[in-house]
Length: 360
Image 1 (cartoon, rainbow, N blue to C red):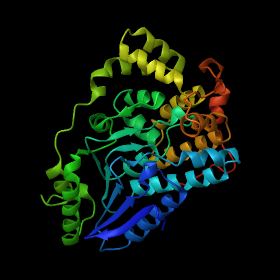
Image 2: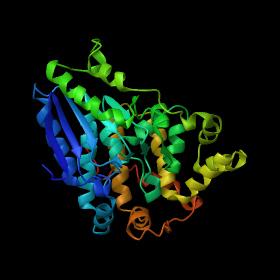
Image 3: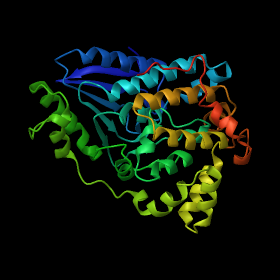
Image 4: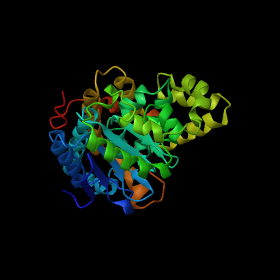
């Protein structure tokens, strides 16, 4: 087990606590391995009735992968990052199909890899402190960890807007877009976790969606839940759906600037600040994700894209600008949307010898 993940029993629940608070619990390969080992062990343990995922500290569940490590590895060829992505995406698939209730508390910052560890679970909780995002285009990557499936499944074109701009969601928007199920005030979370521990110790739970007893797991969560804050994106649906339904990124930008809506202009500017290559590949990935039959199929696609990004320019440059040097001035290559060819986009989806996850 990794020293950066706490794994223990609390009544009838198995507790996983991401414990790297100074780094916003960003994921290392060792942490992914530790979570996988815990879940594999508990799957066959009849005394563990449910699993609960939380993050140490008060700032967030998980800010994503340790992208500084990815930056350094990509410069050295990317073999370590390919192995990390392979194990991470396989873990995401396991969480989505886990045979016991998997409860994720998305308190505070939950981005990228943190979404992958939480938003595929059976019971997903946000609080008033939650900030949920798939901000990959900001660093020259494409939404991964199954995030492209979540974004593609969001109402209308909300997911396209979020994926291309790297915009964040508050708790109301996370519920609206299908990234979460319940809003529980952060002050209520400790009592909820204590109740789940006692409840699961007394009762043999299987799938929370099949239970009808008012004291079952979902009933306990609902008892602590409250109405969520309003979804900010709900009021923006008209221009978002109209603009992002366009066939190309260039047309999306043109429509955004042409609406006369200040929020649309801001979205266009955010999009244009991100990696042109990553933005174009993201649009293609989201459109393809809508037609793929399963999360596993989407993860296979994402792994292929991530391997291609590791071999490109923008991922290393984006992480340099945002995290290493922090100058917030990435020099993308190509620098403009018009210079990103269809062939370059297609390269990210082309089969490679080492880019298969083997997920059915």
